[in-house]
Length: 560
Image (tube, rainbow, N blue to C red; front, side, top):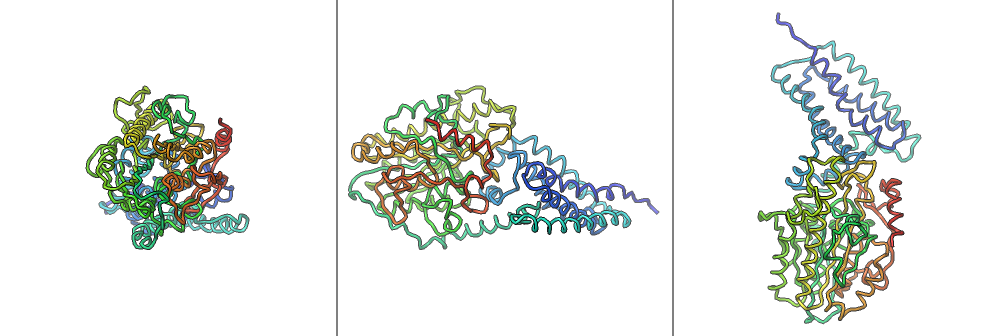
């Protein structure tokens, strides 16, 4: 009889569960959970995987059936590399669904260390599992006994620890604190949100801003809102940065910068819909499915509207809000490069050809989204060296140089828009703000990018400016005066953008609140909030802000 070697299958009974709890062990070091949480998390996960993997002798098939958990483990390790903590959030899965292929590959190409680690850990077991299935390799019956015994023992102990967690800690929730259960629950909620988003046209059909213009119908006016991407205020000369990243805008008259602006979200798929609507952190989760965008408010008030984006559609509310306009286009989908100045011909053409006295245009730029070197033409590579091999802390100088070049390009882009509006000779204004900021290995945490499960100061501190043309200031000097008065106030950029834009344009609506408009005498400093993973508006103390972030926030409050 042919001898069958069971050594590798028997060994896989232990190795695969161990690999699957690598994230649990890492989370025990990165998360500030009580010790009992961490013990429960590791014991239950390791025990459950031992039981599952030893259910049958067909170990190859059992490894393949565990693939979803292998994927979760790999995803979690990459997340920890990027953000130094946090569970794979609901927003992370939504980000995957709303991020285009180009963005994803740009990022993955620059995460060589993290991607190499997960491939080394998890690709060999999967390859061997396929080999075992093809060759009909099985583990011995005797070898199943010890993994099963150890697994059930750990599960039993874990359930006791679980009961103690609920008894000792009122805030404990297995759906939030046990990996991979929390990730499974987050996946289901992300899927639910995606389904609800797909039904947005039906759920929002009856919404109306009931907006009206307080100005004569035949008075010519042009207003532009520009939504930036991944621009952080700390790298803007206008906001106090010591590099000349805004050489054109800083010389422009009629421009007001708000250096203390903070976003309510560190993710595009949340922050942009808030910017484009009357919503805020308090009511976003309940109302976003039933609300239309700022374009609809301007249309109600008699404006001819346009929405032009340098980004691709991403199956989010941004697409729906953009398509409410009279003219709209996502220019990248026609094959144009992802450079923001490709928006200019669309802006000029709309202003020149629109047969209406009142115009409102929204431009959604690509701004400073990673990969930074792809966001600006070669002539804007002023800060050198700006080439980096990958996204690692040792290349921070090069990353910052490239990032600053992208801000320099944004400065030129916004200045060109102001020139175009000023050339019309009619009252015109521009409001610009970024959706969120970015971490670029700024401190000992070594965090990079945005959209992390918990935000940082750098991810929420965003640039915001308002510019008014000479013709506008001459006609509505009080709006410029009030805007200038509030330049050093605390600003919630996400919340105030909608109301400021309507106020500048002289539009009123039941959804317009003067206390949230930077162009209004009644403006009041907001209570800073953050939209967490569960779409709840929470204080920064509850958001995951750390002492480093609060120190930066305190410094910002005292910056002249």
